[in-house]
Amino acid sequence: MGEKTRPLGEKEQLLSHLHVHGGLIAMQVLHVRGRLDPELVKRALAWLQTQHPILRAHIRYGKIVWRHIPFFAYRQPWFDTEGTTEIPLKVLDDSDPDAWRTVFASDIRTPISKGNHPRLRVTLVRQSPDADLNHIVICADHATLDAQSANNLACQLLEYLADPAAAQLKFPLHTALPPPIDTGMLKKSGSGKKTTYTPAIRLPKQAVPDPKKETRVLARHLEPVVTATLVDAIKANRTTVHGAVTAAFLLAMRERYGLDAMTVLTTVDLRRLSKVAVTHETYGCYVDILRTEHPITDDFWATARDASFKLIAALAKDQESASIMKFPGWKVYRREVGPSLRNNRRLDGLAVTTTGDSGLQASYGAYTLEDVTKAVSLDMFGPSLFVIANERLGGLDLSVGYSAIAMSDDEVCRLTDNAVARLERAG
Image 1 (cartoon, rainbow, N blue to C red):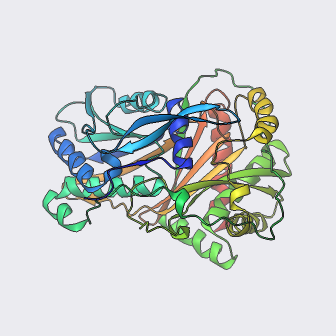
Image 2 (tube, rainbow, N blue to C red; image 1 turned 135 degrees about the horizontal axis):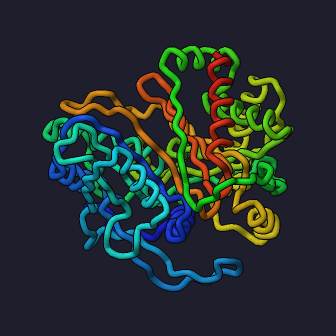
Image 3 (tube, helix red, strand yellow; image 1 turned 90 degrees about the vertical axis):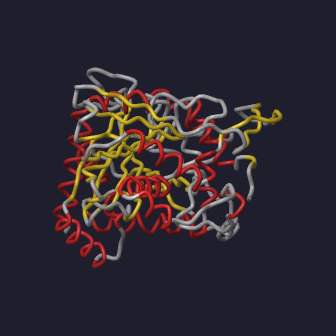
């Protein structure tokens, strides 16, 4: 029947530990039009659990592990599918059309508690049982789902809602817990020389008029025609969507704050780089977060190429040293703790995730997917801006996350609109 239990890998342990303290909690909201029966959603979630072992896994804790650096001791966590409960589904009927935002704000700062329940919870928010618009709010422990997994989950959930019988025939069954990514990655060191640690470069500390310990997200969308023109320009200038999005925000920051350099955190999908058998459809967390440093000039395409080239170079030669997705050592504590605390627990000024084509469609039988909201919690710590770029139906969705304790709504809106304008002009 496949592997039913295994210890968490190092990256999974880190994400699980952060989750317990409210860090990097993963959120996705599907805005679906069409009268939706909660029982159908419940059956869809139950089916997804039968398909993917990571969705029916809880975390149990074993023996104490000692370390010579913080955190000095912890209990070894294990994924275990035996005795896991069903994915909890809550239904909220609220006449307020923005009630889903309240649920989102609460879920993104509320870790999933310890116990024998899965590392996922779902809330269906609507104005009434007869409402035509539904918001499916999905909250997950990032140790179990990455951006690709979240896209897969959304696609399969919606296809089941459209036609349960067809969905059950279409998708392959996974029987064993997926392996941790750590076991399948080659250690790369380039020339063999020890790479100098790259400290975070932060935005100037912000004066926030009404600071709140709350993660917020600002959404922007590039229409398909604009996106197609931008993609053609990206190809002509020998760079990538990631490079263009990164450059747009870096130049907006340069214009606003007079910066001539910035470090960027980039989430990269490691499925194709792993030696273990991990397919595109595998649910789990198969990502790394790399830090690269970039000069910022007024040349959009030069900045975009630099962002792409240095990321590729880091993956090829210095992934281990460029990665921040590991338990920090003393060097990191010495270089980062003080500046982070003085800057409202901010690390780098910018983080960018580009997820490629989500695979999501507009129509699913009787239902229409009107929009998608994505974010991770940033209140515990994080970059000033966390940009998730998601291609959908030929367009480009931008979800810009930020902590309201460190950045004001107006400031984020100003930077985002500047960046979006640059993307539109670049095409």
